Image (cartoon, rainbow over all chains, first blue to last red; front, side):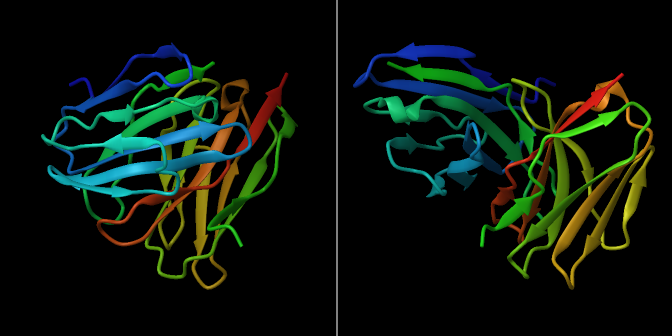
Length: 113
Length: 110
């Protein structure tokens, strides 16, 4: 049981490049989400999904796209990277329901030059 | 007012000390409450859920006061390995997202 698998662990991009952060979970969780974590800002929600085919915006969605074609996968796309997107990104999943805990991937350190 | 607010840190304590973290939340409809622990450059991991009656897990005790919209975490007999950032997390019903506080850093010294 791998839990939440997130790749890559590190990435350096140039401004304007695009890339996709991959996230997969094998726990059959309905809910999946992407957070970014910046110094002094805490974890901020980018996008989330409550099931295959359903996505919604979080607190800081601009510059990011997501899709949820399967229960297992929830990729995060940066279409045109900007230096402001330099951050640590975490994917997380959980079962629906009050009191269900969130399981995190190990994170991606992204630098945009 | 921010949705979830925590004590500013860092807290510097000696081994064996008792330390308490506080957290307030603004959404009175919140139904789920957690404390997560995050080590440097690692992902957050669940430390414990917080129940209305309060709950204890070894050296850790969590309390919830719904009337005051306040959550606390007490760590007794601090260990060096307790050094980490502690995140207060609050959720509403069912399909909602969880909101994280900015975290409080704890540094336990010998």
